Length: 176
Image 1 (cartoon, helix red, strand yellow):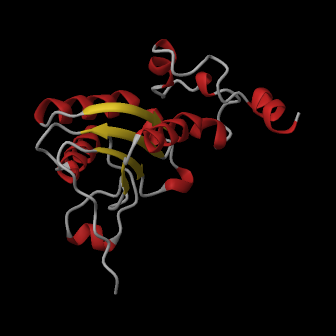
Image 2: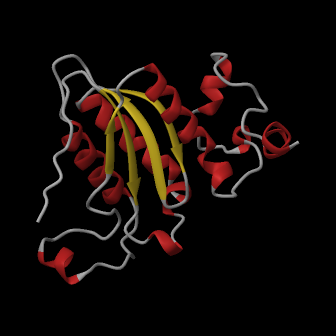
């Protein structure tokens, strides 16, 4: 059996994808967006990090975190964030036998995807991926229309325009 070895770079910048356990029928993350924001604040207060970008969809999220110099412990931050969020919401999710044996809730998938950002091109590609995700999944026609996205901050910074990743513009650019 092959073991996955996570990348650890002290002070590194990482892209993450984190999913709910029941992705097919869950809007938990946007229904409890304030609780998710609280869990992020709670985690950042105890273990600082910079959330460079984030998009929250109904059943999963993507983000880029930059960790402080000398620190590579993103797994502990994810445990803290997930557990704090889970404690804030009502218990009504399906819980598997294996989770019951370990006294776990069934809110989050145990695993998550992590990718260490290598350079500016890699950073920009992941930043675009994050902000395009609501369009990709069909929730909105323009990235700016998704409320649960850091694109609004990046537009103010001048990185994106209001029409970036708008479906009519994308169609015109690529097939017009």
